[in-house]
Image 1 (cartoon, rainbow, N blue to C red):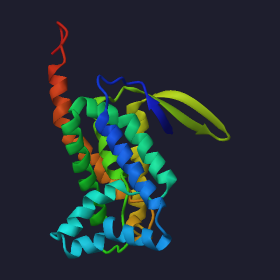
Image 2: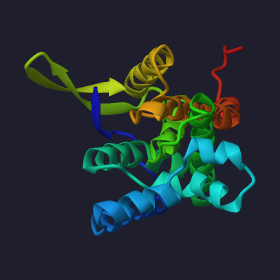
Image 3: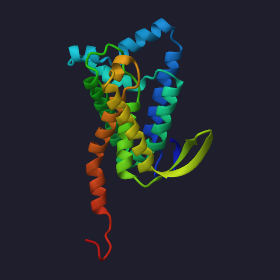
Image 4: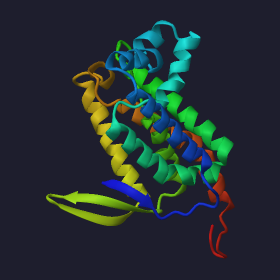
Length: 232
């Protein structure tokens, strides 16, 4: 399932979401201007490398890469998929948390996702980069706050393409099951960080962080919900 938009209106302009998208696109455009050698040096300097972080976790440079890696992408498909998910689901989370709360939530989710991947690939010397861990936290928040929101989704059926409105809990739940399954499967072979593949545990860690951080907000919203005369 590939979501293309949701039908969940917002009350204000999601300027933080827009700024995050522009920042990610801006960094990627800058990467395109680099020679292959300079690009490798850029990734080596500013992407997150688990083995270097574990070797010196209190180094300001290594701590900085936990944040800078969130704004770097390996290709157009990587960037496009992440920004699509951020735009579809991020604006409603920003609307609920407010601009300051949302940026704090986004960065916290991204940091937790990066550290989760580090734990799964402690010896990896390959750089880890991308916004998907932070966006996974956004998905965790969305499934708690707006589980029944309608998401317009592309569903490939053999050689045919179907477009359908699907509840958010199915779209995001399906996404998480894929991440969890692939993450557990990677443990039997090699960690994603060690093989240069997808950082599955960053997705899993980010999603779970989003759930934990959003649970108090969801419970408070449920407590404020008006009850009928016969409800208990």
